[in-house]
Length: 221
Length: 221
DNA sequence: TGCCTCATGTCAGCAAGTTGTCAGGTTGGG
DNA sequence: CCCAACCTGACAACTTGCTGACATGAGGCA
Image (cartoon, rainbow over all chains, first blue to last red; front, side, top):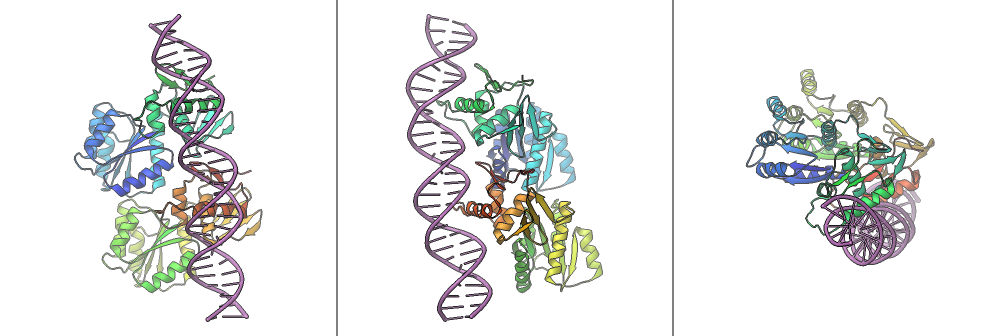
């Protein structure tokens, strides 16, 4: 899952980024409001962590413009100025949750997971489709109840496809969510990765939509 | 467990620090109110021991600002000026407990343990998973009822993993909780430590999740 | 003081797991 | 029937984690 982190304080940004990556997310960081707006407007993120005190454009303004443009990704708002009014403002503007600084990393991760879940309409940190179940807390995937050992990249792939189940996910989107940034595209690494996952979870779990991408159908077998 | 100690008297600070470390905590000490505020605001501690008579900013003011910012770690307040009014003040401000100087080290440790437990919502200081049991009060680990001698670092490692059982804990998080601060990462000290613990508790107690971290599964064998 | 023990970090080498690349095969839509 | 898209197996390069051996330093004790 790709997450956009908008935070101008280098140190905090790197702390958060590390914590999120340790939790299996792919993090992209930007440091000012205009960058943030542009990225959030043109790229596709599973969630955004948005600091309010930003150079160039205020966080709330950024959020407002995203929402005005129909961008619907869940947004977790951070602020050092922990006032109630601001909190209400933030939620009115379209923030999904609000976390006053400073906070504990575990709490950030928990809230992030929660808004991602909520935005996908799930209730628990365990997702199941057909015979496949994924536990995000344990970073564990099971097939008919049997635990399957997945590597880091394999896990990210499965996790993203499961979060997006019932929808066709383009190769590009997968690349962005599994690896950090894409760039080089004369490689079939992703196809190989898909192959390896299929070998472990069964050939028919991930369907190929030739020309469009891949999907895990909502109701499988 | 990381503890922040705020105390301007060098001698007392070092005494307390020693006592706490002997009890298995990782202690960081600061000597004035502004440092204290900053640290407590930006870092993540399991508890704080806060002296009230401080240079630069009064202890109560520090506490007030932490709480205003939503910091929720348990705080044990120390004061030499053992007045009732101050005590009430302290507890109103958000202190979890109050200890008038002078005090016996045992009492300090006991109270600290108590507020940490309370804040975590645990009723007992004993945790058990499978054949392993850990008593935080006695700092004792048993395997199938047999006491196992662990060094300080080994103990911290086991304690943190047990507190986080059922969840994958990244190397980074372990480093922070076992050693004070992380930073240097050209060392395999943590891996060696894991190895030594495994030699004592059995190879399969701690599972390695290659690329993710380590975990003690909730239901073990 | 000088010797011992214990805790802990460092290092090098090994074993195993992971991942990208490539070459050649397969497939399905136009 | 053709071709781009996709799959597959093999392989090599690289990472990651484990282990034993050793160095160091603190502290206890004779």
